[in-house]
Length: 125
Image 1 (cartoon, rainbow, N blue to C red):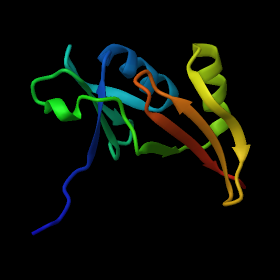
Image 2 (image 1 turned 60 degrees about the vertical axis):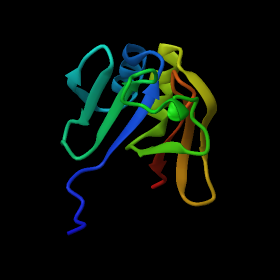
Image 3 (image 1 turned 45 degrees about the vertical axis):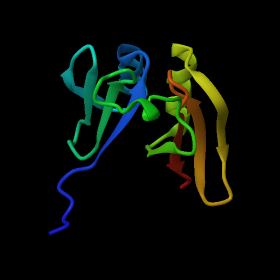
């Protein structure tokens, strides 16, 4: 069967620990596995996972050890404004401050430590 049992998005990073700090600070991820070359993060309700892997790891083909492009991550949270405040306090790079969109969400754009654009959105009530 083609039933999906699990989905993990893995981000190639130059600094696994900095990326771990970024994602655990802005979202409710907990560290499930932690090593010098790979960190597995899991949401507190265990429904979402994010992997952080050293870009130069031998398990990553050389052609895929490049900076990210052509994609971004979106996380829907209760309040994009709360994440914005955390991001300012931590000195994380803000691409776009929270703004209301035409499609009914409030959106904040951040850049993670390795250049991945991270869209933090919340539903406008």
